[in-house]
Amino acid sequence: MARDNTKYKFEESVYGKGRLVHAVVATYIERYDATLAQLEQIFPGALQNKNGNVFITQQEYDERLSKSSDVENRFYNKTEDRLLTHDGITIYVSNQWGVGNVEGFYQQAIKQGFTIEKIISSSQATLEPFFTASNENTISPLNQILYGPPGTGKTYHTIEAAVKAAEPAFTWTNRDELKAEYARLVADKRIRFVTFHQSYGYEEFVEGLSAKTENEAIKYAVKDGVFKIISNNARKNLEDSQRDQQSLDREQNFDLALDAFKLSIFEGVGSLSLTDETSGSQAFSHSLFEEPANSRLTKAVSIVNVEDEGFRYCGDWKSSQIMKFSDLKVLYLAGVKTRQEIKLFEGVSGLAKQHSSYFLKALEQIEQFIPKELPQFEQRKKQNFVLIIDEINRGNISKIFGELITLIEPSKRKGTEEEIELVLPYSGDTFSVPDNLHIIGTMNTADRSLAMMDTALRRRFDFIEMMPNPELFNNKQIKGIDLTRLLNALNKRIEALYDREHTLGHAFLFPVYNEPDEGEAFELLKAAFKNKIIPLLEEYFYDDWNKIRLVLGDNQKSDELRFVEEHNEPYDSLFGSNHGLETYEESKTRYTLIAFDGENSVWDNPQAYIAVYTSIK
View 1 (tube, helix red, strand yellow):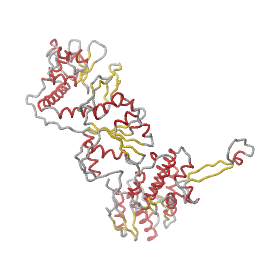
View 2 (cartoon, rainbow, N blue to C red):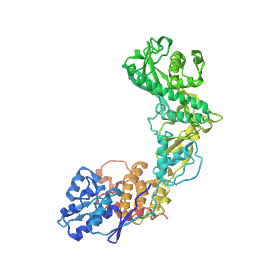
View 3 (cartoon, rainbow, N blue to C red):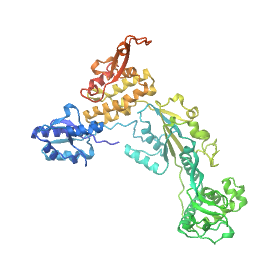
View 4 (cartoon, one colour):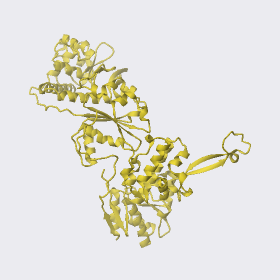
């Protein structure tokens, strides 16, 4: 992803965006003995944002802090960063500057006579998780799972994997082009995305019953899940690509006729006569949805609605039925003309056979809308479809796939010599998985070990390991902190104390690597430890702070560089000499994580981070 790496040379120093603003305001106060009122006039808050602030006073800062600690992340608040105006007011300068607002401040500074040189550098490319501008025509496996510890770019990398599977010949030069192609394929419904979780099941993934109220009664209809939908779309494309032009034209003209027929219902055009008794006697109009008698199929049976799946009709019986569009299409394409032929035909639902008279009359009406001049349709080409399953290991595979787990095997796919079809339990539809449907899963090994994966799933997928890659940082240093050595040291210790599946991904430090301003990059490193690394270590080691301090190398540091403070408290001082506790030690050791905020915090000392890895060669 493109990133603005512009730096600014001011007063013989080079700054990033936020630090430039701080330096200019500080210099203006020093050069012109500026008061608070003068600063507010020269650098109004609108330069930062419509309702923003270039800076705020100590009083405003304290008021915001009392309501939310978020203010600490939005202003330079260290002691050395606070500025004092000529009239004795302490101010905090905002650090919220980017491409969208720094240009206005830059222009205002130029107007005040400051000389600022823009340094636009393209020498450092923005680092992205496992991103490669690939022009290779590689063959993607039908079933693959990207697995690894958190922060290794699994979900991020699925965009590339999905596009390669859907369009093997597509090439790109940057990620924006890749994302544009991914968005196009999603819009065309050739790529779908789903996330598994503990309560996800067969009914959501394949098909299930959906309840709704109709005439104050609860009705149940079969609702297709994402896997069934994309499988059917892929299979339809596969079948169309293998058909001759004549049969393809016939099907597509039926679709046009069906759409025109449905439109005539809503527009009140034409008539529907599905039996000889009512032939030509009833016209469709909007009132058919209000008065079923206006849309009779027989004297006792009427259409009551047009739904996504088909025509809903009912009669003297209590419940209504759905005349599926798919059944009507199959009958039309097969050239079925009599009730006896329908009853012997295997490709339609049992309802079509039971109510064959209604289906035949509906077909007669639809055929009236077949265009006299048939448009020519292009032969459809075989296309690949992709289903992305994020966190595939968090779901109950047996519960979600059910009997369909067999069908995803490459050798059992539709179009292969050993293809298998099954009958779905709710709809009764015949179902198969075509060989142009790719399934891409992602798996966080810290959430569930690969060894615990469902065996049936493991046999049917190719597993692609994505482990932390500290070498991507190329030993870049932030205030002397070597990012490659830092991540390597942490992961070596985690692997020794736990396992390699719970190591830390390189993506946690990408914002640090990509930030051109060293001061801001260090703040991002501190934030990565505070919001990502430490919480993960707490989860991995179940609050065993002795192991956490070992991972951080605190046992090999001097006291002033330790992130975790150790306290030994004798039991006698806690409970008195006659406490009666049966213990093997005389004192209790407890640990305290040093606060990230506050004056002279160890987290603000680069040497504390360097000391994490200095003992490892």
